[in-house]
Amino acid sequence: MIIAMLLAHLVGDYVLQWDALAAWKGRAVKGALCHGSIVLAVTLLFAVLIDPAWWPWALLIGLAHIAIDAGWVIFNRRFVSHSGLYGLVRLLTDQTLHLAVIVGAIILSGYTTPIGLPGTIVTEVQTHRLWVIALGYVLISMPAWIFIEFVLYGLINGSAPDFGRVAKYKYVGSLERGLITTFVATGQFMLVPVVALPRLVLESPQYFGSNRTTLFLAEWLGSLALAVLIGLALGRL
Image (cartoon, rainbow, N blue to C red):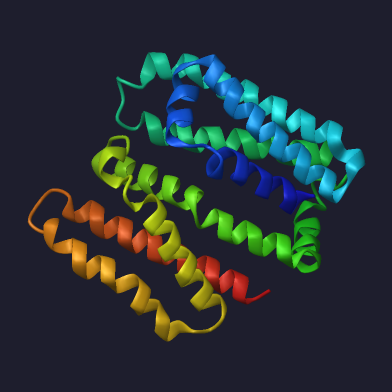
């Protein structure tokens, strides 16, 4: 159930959240309700696939997600234009809250105990390999892109991501990371440069000598490193 709920969170909160919805949920409670309803539906679906009787706890996770995102609307109106690091702090806090709710529901439902949580995770990884593989590939797509952009822009530029500039990397970067993850997981390490180097060679010249150089190289290295790490983890299954 733990792997399923994490996967449901990533699918509902990232993969099924398009740009317009992301902007809407950040400025209006109705947008947060729409987005949260999608997360709720996905969470219920994944929970029922594992244990139909667990639906009340999946409902709790979905409703908590709606409440958290609706609460951010108030903070966004007050702080978004006053702090360049607000976006990064919000993202990290938001994901911490959502994960805390998932873990809390898992424990309160009696599925495991706080002490037994690590052991339960290990057992699930060993017994639900397909779910873990799906989790890895979903993680390396939209969630990885969002985290890379927010973390690097926040730490290097002290600002929110310039999505007008980086939007073109959303799908290309996801495909690139997915291929690298696959090659690493299957032991075909020699193929990694074939996927990783073309974008560096073709796009880096336009950034060299400008204030975008550091960001571009950091984004490229961060994307590559994350894909390799996920690939190594999946390769051990």
